[in-house]
Amino acid sequence: MATITRVALDGMGGDNAPAEVVKGAVEAVKTHKEIHVLLTGKEEVLNRELSAYDYPKEQIEVINATEEVEMAEPPVYAIRHKKDSSMAVAMKLVREGRADAVVSAGNSGAILVGGQVLIGKLKGVERTPLAPLIPTAKGVSLLIDCGANVDARASHLVQFARMGSVYMEHVIGKKNPTVGIVNIGAEEEKGNALVKETFPKLKACKDINFVGSVEARDIPKGDVDVIVCEAFVGNVILKLYEGVGSTLIHKVKAGMMTSLRSKIGGILVKPALKETLKTFDASEYGGAPMLGLKGLVVKTHGNSTAKEICTSIIQCVTFHEQHINEKIGEAIQNAEE
Image (cartoon, rainbow, N blue to C red; front, side, top):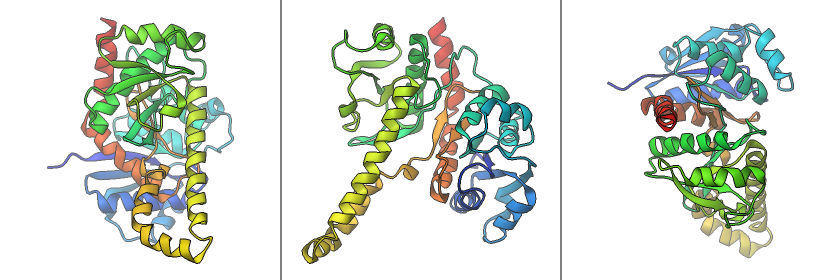
């Protein structure tokens, strides 16, 4: 009998909520019988959206929440004062053990604060990073941290490397994943103060496969499986990645429409090209998990469509079945002994 994964979904979070969020939930349960979605938000609104779809009713449960966290709202205020928001209610379901994971496209800051305050960190975890998968020539790599800790210390980056290694091995199936720290050169003596302090600490870790520095231009090649950096650098890499990817797709499509010859050629290569360009689509990889918590929190883009919501829900299944939180906790504890 398959293990049931219970996902608390913030039904009112994101620019396209609740329509795209509800649609994503429906798509997830229609393709995966082992998923049970706890959809949080204004009951009447969510039930009205759900009424437009044919889906297995027993797999989606609406949990009423009377408040919403606005996208530009101060994070700490939102978590402290909006205790009945769709986001807070979803996180409380994880804390209470009624859900295995929470997915939200809502206010990023509120998700980060809520994850630490309402769910809590694993024992020994200093900081909780956001870790999205990004496409590379060899498949995918994990970028950690991409937005949670802009004032990280060396000890934080070392823990990020351990968390990322556990994730890549057990969720992605990459045995003994390689780890690199983002730097402006390959030499050990290069970098800012944080990188120079962190490099020897990572080098001394016997429980991770640290291979040294990785320059930004080598990230798309897939030179390392786990890309370690503090959040400011990580967020710049992620946003540039997304921008270049969407620009390339636009340019390729526009180029195929410039002449009759290019249009004919475009028709011939369309199937292969479509499959290739698909790897640049962020919605194919789901959201960014917030690692190091007592429960799984997945942050998706604020403008997520149903496709990305669906993918984010589905990725929670592997995380739950592989007991990633427990394995991250064990890795951190073993490193301290």
